[in-house]
Image (cartoon, rainbow, N blue to C red; front, side, top):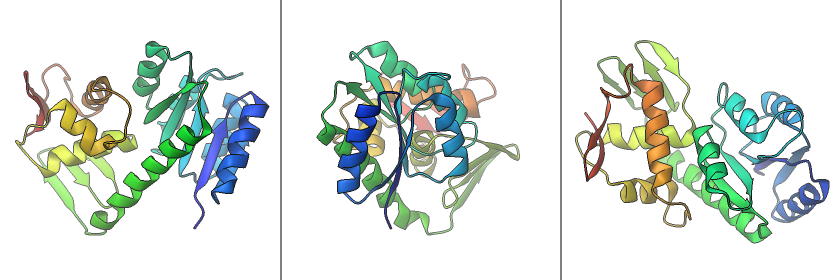
Length: 228
């Protein structure tokens, strides 16, 4: 079944080039040229990945990503300008799964998309086993990829769920930032360990009643992160 991608950028020549290249790989491509149109399309369709530029009319890419995360865990790859670190970090803070710096090579775009698809496909088999983990107020549905705290569903991004699932399935095992980056993002991911720190911080803000005194996701100083 063809993978469905949404490409969002106000530069129509860039969109046209990406669309043509992805369609050569038998992917189905939708396009949007501003933030409001992008949100409408994500609400109305089921996409495998959203490729989202930061600089957009009407709503910025960061605003779009933040609003998408209120109702969907679809993987989002941000397109950021000039290699600016703040753009990259902000993209991750707002719920993006990855980023690509402009100007980019279309082969890099395709490689990042395929890497995310491989990781998603690789998780499909184990998830067929019905597995629900309950510990205190936390309930993790590994098959449905849903999290509940005190009976209330908490909306996590794909990567936030992957990190939490890995930690919960291996209680008291401490994972270094480097190990988490390799296991969750893959050996081919070009980012650094700050990506892990951003996701852990955002995860704690969602699952912990007091993130500064975590109940679930703990830090072993100088070593890494663990769940207990």
